[in-house]
Image 1 (cartoon, rainbow, N blue to C red):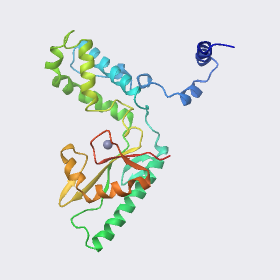
Image 2 (tube, helix red, strand yellow; image 1 turned 180 degrees about the horizontal axis):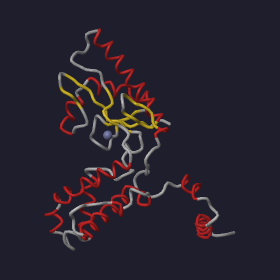
Image 3 (cartoon, protein in one colour; image 1 turned 60 degrees about the vertical axis):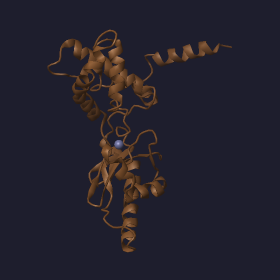
Length: 251
Ligand SMILES: [Zn+2]
C-alpha cells in the first residue's frame, strides 16, 4: 500500500510526463496569470523610469498576482463567441448576458407599470454601464496607474526598512494597489460575470462612482434589484461597498 505522500508524489510525476498533452493540462488547471503572454511581469513597461524602479514595479505585480491567486480564479481574455450582449453594446459571458438582458427588461416593465400607477416619478430607464473587461485591458489599466500609485506611496515607502524599493516597500505597495485595482485576470469584470449598472433619478445620473453610494442606495432601481435581482441569478457583492456592481452567480 503506497503512502499518501508517495501517491501525491507519483501524481505530480504524472503531470510532468512529456506525453501529457499541454492542452489537457490547460483545461484542468488554468495557467497562472504570470505565465500568460501579454500579462507577464516582463511585459510591463514604464517609460522614463529607472531600471530599479521597473524591477520594483514587476515585483509588486508578481506579489499582487500571487495574493489574488490564493483568493480567486484567474480568467484570461474570453473569445468573442463566448460573450453576449447584456445591454446596448455592453458584453458579458453569454449566459450572464442573457440573464442581465432579462433582468433589465423586467426592471423596465416594472418601472413603466409603477409610472402608470404614479408610484414613481423622475426615474429614467435603468441600464448596464459596463461589464466585461478583458484581462489584457486590466493589465493596461494596472500598468497605466502604477506610476501615480508609486508617487502616492513615496513618503510611506521611504520610511520603511530596506528603503523605498525594498521588500517591505513591495508589500506596502501591493496592499495599496489592491485596494484600488484588481490584478489582471482576477476582477469579476474579467470573468464576464460582473456588471456595473447605471440609472438616472431626479436628474442625477448614477453610475459607478464611489461618491454616489448613498444616492444609489436610495434609488428606485437599487430597491428593485434588492427585491428582484436574485430571480435572474444576480447578487450584490457584500465584500465591496459598490451598490451599482452586481454579480451573476448562475450557471
Ligand atoms: Zn463593478
